[in-house]
Structures are given as structure tokens and as C-alpha cells.
Image 1 (cartoon, one colour):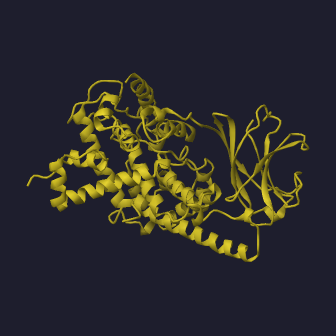
Image 2: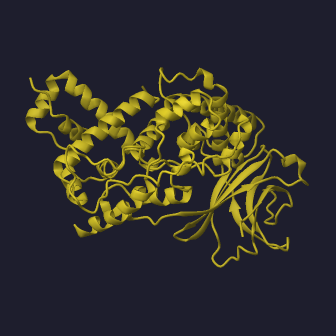
Image 3: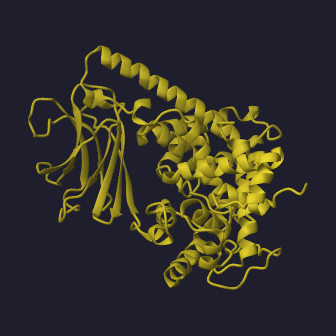
Length: 208
Length: 268
């Protein structure tokens, strides 16, 4: 299996630089945010904007709408930061809840506008995507985005192992061979990663 | 009754085969069955989201708009909203329990040298473009096989251009748009999205030349007011450097209506 090894040598080195670490954990960001530190919003944005934007974009379809919703979410989060209690749950959960609300509001507004447009007899060319187009209610999208976020944060080689486990038909033995890792290492990485993803989904997911 | 090895439960959740005695145990043990159900849910949600292997990065200009709306100082802001990497402290820690074999798989490297600056400045500047390329190396291609993960060439974002209304069209002052230019396998691709009040007609995207007279139509924005257009081969983007979105009436004419909704300029 020389081709997979060669590909992974190249990709691992690239990921080793791309995936390098910062020094503030999610908990520190949450504390800074709750205390209203002056740079806290930029920390929270840097950590979570991609999650919020992705939920909005995959629910609404139009990047301009997704940008609007993202802005609304972070402004609402900043203005409401006194109501965020780290003891009750994570910042990610709280932000996903705000995102869900803003997306649902945007979808309702769109439905109302679509109703007015239909009443006025406008042509189909001006119709925006909505639930009928396969976009729409954000709960499943939130679940997927939460898991994607956690998978990215697994570290290496856990992330590569799980990407292969999820998205290819390779068995764990074949994954171990492809990555030149001991079988026991791969099995325990798979177990701990899946448990960690389960914990994250139960904490932040929308369909629980 | 001994429960199923947790390592094995995880493999079962991934769809690997179960031995007969394990299947029998699962049938009679609610704890193991519940654990398997929860892990299986993680697997099925992840697999159903195969189009979401990487998060979509928000456009670079969005942070300053967020900061302005929230009333906070935009500087120093995030370099860009990153598709974040491993959690701090986790990458780089060797797996002492199992002892990783040396090989072509580095466990990950710690970040940049620790300078006495704000923590986010110490992180490497992972631009949206690099994140997109790296993510696509993992996420590209179809479902099965390592080889297909490498299929699908990387897409490199070249520029993100805000599109803004023109002063001479006061009726469009609320309109906003974004154009993202990316290098794809078939040349440069422009993705345009528009937010504008609803008016009769349809939106069309043009490249305008510097002389203000010549123009090239790229196509219509469909429902959703967005579209992806491949640049015609050989077009001189230094000359056709402005992106224009017009509102076209349903009159059958292919000419620019002379009503520009939003416009932006390609970086030179």
C-alpha cells in the first residue's frame, strides 16, 4: 500500500503545521467573555464564528443572509453576556442556541416575504430558497457542525484515524496499516474519540 | 456478566462486524445496548454530514462589521475566523499509554515560540485559504477509499470582494453583496451573493472594463440570489476589473439595463 502511505506523509506534515496549537482553551475564552474583557468578543469570534456561519449558511443558502445572521448572533451574545453562566453549560452550546433562534427568525421572515410575493404574482425567478429546497430547520445542521468542530479539535493522529473510519470503508486493521500505527493504538484512539464526540454532541447538539 | 470491551463497541458503532457472542450480549444487556446506540448516533450524524467535513469560513470583512455593530474595538481582531485546529495542549502530547511507533505520522507540533504577546497572536495565521486547501485534502472526493480522499484538486481563495451600491442609485442603498474569487481546477471561479430588496426582474452579473463601456456578462443569479461563474478563458482581469450586478427587466434584451445594484473592484 505505497500510495496511501505516500499521501499521508505529505498530508500529515501539512496538517502538523496547519493544526498547530494556541494557548487558550475554550474554558479560558468563556471566562474572559463572561467577565467582559475588552478583547473577549474577538476571542469568541475567532473560536466560534465558523460554526455559527456554517449553521447559518447551510440553513439559509445565501452567504449574504448567513453573514447577517452571524453578525446578529455575535452582537446578541455580546449584549447578553451577563446572562451566560459557564456553570450551566458551555459557550458553544449557548452560541448554538442563539444561532438556532436567529436562523429560525430569518426563515420565518423569508416565508412571510415569500407569501407576500406569491400574493403579488411575482415570477419564480425571484424566489429564495426555503424549506422546500432542502435547506431550512437548523437542528440537524447544528448537530453536524458541532461534530465537525470537535473532530477538527481531536488532534493528530486521532483526527486522521476518525476521518478514515467515518468516510471510507477501511477496517480499523487497514487504517492501522495505512497510518503505520499499532493496532491497539488505533483501537483506543477510535474508542476515546468516539466517546469524546458523543459527549460533545450530548452537550451542544440540538436534537437531544 | 462481563460487558463488551469498549474498544469493540466503538468498532461496532462504526459498522464493523460483531461476533455471535457479542450480538447475544447486546441483545440482553441494556447498558451495552444504550452505549452502542449513542455511539452509533454519532457515527450516523457524522456520515450524513459528509458535505460538512470542514466548516465554512466567514468572509474576512465580517469581523469589523460585527465589532462595529457590537460597539467594540475591532483591533486587534482575529486575523481571520479560522477553521480551528486541535485544542491547545492536546496536539504534541505523545500517547504514553500505547506508545506510538515512529513513522511518517508526526503527532503534531506545538505552536510558535512563546512571545509575550496576546495569545491569539501566537497562533499561526491560518488563513481561510490555507484552511480551505487543507480541509479539502481530507474532505475532497467521494465516499470510499483513501485514493478518493486525495481526488478533487484544492480550491484556493484569491480574493473576497465586498459589493456595494452606487450613489447614483438611491433605491439600492440597502443592497449588499459579496464576490469571492477562487482558483479552481478549470480556471478562476467567481462566487457572487446578493442581498437586495425584492424588485421585478432578475439579477445579472457583469465584468466591467476600465473604459466603462465594454462589459462581459457572466450570467444570472438564480433563486437564493447567488451564483458561481467560471471566468471566460483569456479574459484580462486587469482590464475587466469591476464586478457589477444589474437588475434586468423581463424584456428579452441582453443589454445591461443601466441599473446597477451593487459593484466592487477586483484587487490589482
